[in-house]
Amino acid sequence: MALKRPRRMRVKPIAGFSVNRLIPNILTLLALCAGMTAIRLALLGRFEPAAVAIILAGVLDGIDGRIARLLKGTSTFGAELDSLSDFVSFGVAPATLLYVWTMDGLHGVGWALALLFTVCCALRLARFNTQLGSDLPSYATNFFTGVPAPAGAGLVMLPMFLNFETDADFFRSPVLNGVVLALVAALMVSRVPTYSFKSFRIRREFVLPMLLGLAAMAAFLTTEPWLTLLIVGGLYIGSMPFSIRSYGRLRRASAPPIFPNLFS
Image 1: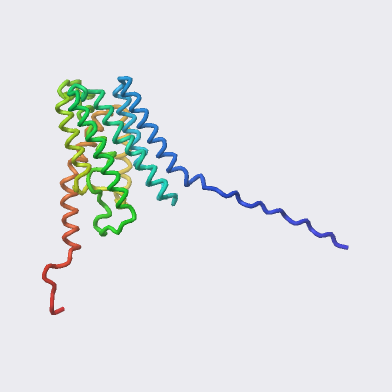
Image 2 (image 1 turned 180 degrees about the vertical axis):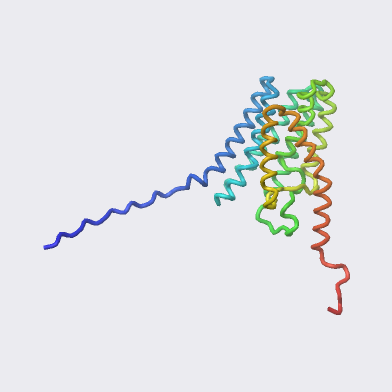
């Protein structure tokens, strides 16, 4: 009599989330921790490390969304967590840093300007969240409406970077920084179209030069960080007229003709 083979026990998969899908949320939490660390360092008077912490939060914020799309781990939870992290890291942290660094010299006015920047950052993020999932024109997918929060945090700290690079007290003037705070706050809630670079495609022959450029920028960030950040900020400001012109050209091209051809 032939013996029956024992049945193989099938192990049921454990229900839960894939670790790969958690990676973007982990990066978002690290960005939030960097923003909170920047606030602590600012209160301790360690301004240069505080600025570095905000820049690190910006780097993490720039890669978490792209990794989420690559790993197909995008979710409503991740989008909400990202916005909350952005508000702390790029709204509260830069305002606190600048107030402790110089804006307290204007007393109540300085605090009001710091509050203005934070409020405008919150409004900009709220507007961005309401646009998620909405049907935008095809030409608008490559543009942000207003300056995004990470870029706003970098722009508002440009006088601080100039002070770190040159040791000139002029760039620590609370009046100068107050003007920059107000201007950047207005840009964040404005309707100015800025490049999003989300769908930015690079031709094959330019991939290697771009990688070399990124490697050079990383090297300069370790040797001349403030000068490099100033150059990056200047290039971003210089790109705004081109983004406005490009957006207007695409919008005009997609608009229906005012006088359609009635004989077609």
